[in-house]
Amino acid sequence: MSTIENITKKIIRPSQWETIRTREHYQKVVFTNGCFDLLHRGHITYLAQARDLGDCLVVGLNTDASVKRLKGVSRPINRENDRALLLAALTSVNYVVLFDEDTPLQLIRQISPDVLVKGGDYAIKDIVGASIVIEKGGSVQTLPFVNGYSSTNLIHQIK
Image 1 (spheres, rainbow, N blue to C red):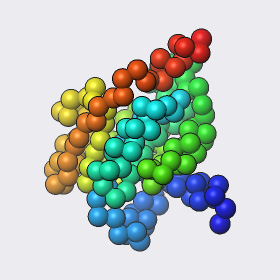
Image 2: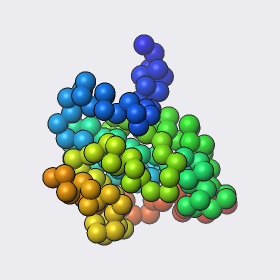
Image 3: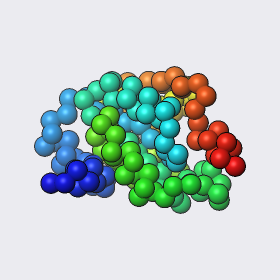
């Protein structure tokens, strides 16, 4: 199998997850989500730290339509398939799953992660899906941002 095929097979549909989790025998699945529009050092650091919290990192990725609703008509800069491929190419990311809703609540229910992770700008009580993960015996964690890195800042610099 070629390298690009190995990368693209990490981009999965939600319906594939249960079979994958059973087959791979993951002990501790970590889930995070976002738009990941312009991948930068902050994202790389965040995803590597998230992966260190378990033995499998699943990234929920907002579709283009979802990003537009959340961030405005000028976003995303990169299309969903390109963003998914970039994330899947990272060694810290095991799987990428696109979702079209404004929040990943349904996807969190389906993935049923052991650890739910978001950036440090979130209070745990405000993280979508936190109560679901905690009720199932999992944990919810926030990770600090790398100062000076954000997609919005990059867009302003480019302009």
